[in-house]
Amino acid sequence: MSYMTTSERQLSLVTEISAANTRAEFAQALVGAARAYGFRHITLMHAPAPESILLKTLLIETSLPSTYFNQFDRARIMRFPMLSTGMGDSALPRSWSLSDNACDSIFPDELSKILQAFGMPTGVAVPAYTRDSERILFWLGGDRPPLGQTELNELTMVTLHLLDAYNRTKQSKLMEHPPLSAREREVVRWTAQGKTSIEIGQILSLSDHTVNAYMTSAIKKLDCVNRTQLVAKAIRLKLIN
Image (cartoon, rainbow, N blue to C red; front, side, top):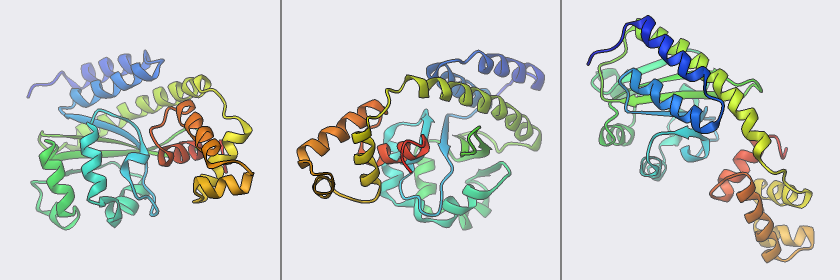
C-alpha cells in the first residue's frame, strides 16, 4: 500500500479536519483520517468505565455497521477487564494486531472472532479529553500491517485536530437540540434511577401512557434510539444529575 509522505498526508488531513464545522463534515473527516492510514473503520466513543455494559451506548460517531455492535454486545464483551479498565484509564495510544501472539492473552476469543469477521485484525485506540473533561477514544481498525512508532506518533497528532473539530461541532450540535421540558427531565431522571414507566407514573401522579409520551418526546429531541441511549446522553449533556 502506498502513502503520501508524512508531511503531505498530515497537511492534507489537517486541512480537511479544520474545515469541518458540522457533524456530517466531522464524520467525513473521521473516515478520511482512517483511510489515510489504511484502516477500514473508525469509531469515536466515550471511554468505557467498569460499570459499562453495552458498547453501543458509548458511541459518538462510527463508520462500523450496527451488526458489529449487535454482535459485540450480544457476546457481552464489555465485561472483560481489558476493555472496562485497560482502555478506560490509559493515557497512551494502544495499537495491536491479532497476528501478535501477545493478543491471545489480552483479547477474549469472542472479540478476536468479531474483529476478524469484520476485517479488522489490526487496530489502535487513541485516548483524549473533551473541553468538558469527558474521556473519549478514537478507535481505528482494519486489515493492514501494525503501525510503526512514526505512524503512531503522526496519527496521535492528527487525532488532536480531530478532537478540536469534535469540540467545535459538539457545541454546534448542542445548540441544535430543543431543550427538554421540566417534565421530560423528571421522567428521564427517574428512568436513570431504574424506575419503570408505571413506577414513574405513580411518583409523578401520571398515567404510564403519559410517561411513555414524555419519554418518546425526549428520545426524539436528543436524537436517540432507545431509553438506554437517552439516559446515557442526558447524563453526558448534563441535562440530569
